[in-house]
Length: 150
Image (cartoon, rainbow, N blue to C red; front, top):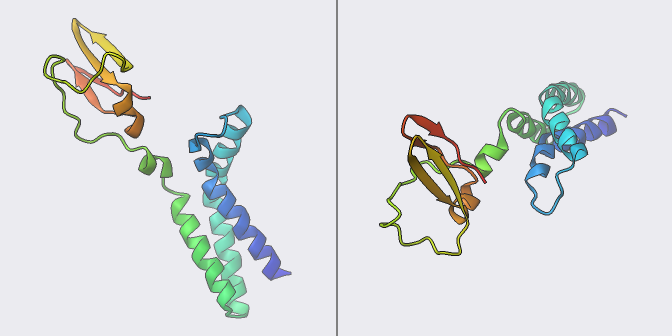
């Protein structure tokens, strides 16, 4: 009974840990229910990892089996991953983007879509195909910090 309960607990932990990654799958429609599921998984995964680790410690104390050690390893990995934002690894901002005058920048085609910003008479255009990889870019225009995103 304890074996099956710990296996189910670790499976629930893995689902809760990786639920936030569902919103990054481009083929899935981001519905309110999917976003709520992802947020609920992210919220309960840290506590669930503590419960799973405690249950596995009891299981391993009673009988040291290789399956118990494997489940403990999975639990520890999930515990660590539940405390970091995996989406930041996948979609990190461009760290050292370089800015050029439009006349000097020859890689933008007339057919390219851009995201444009005008602040205090200064302007900046961000080609969407450059933002598509990182999805965001830290920049400063005049004295204002910008985070153009796509």
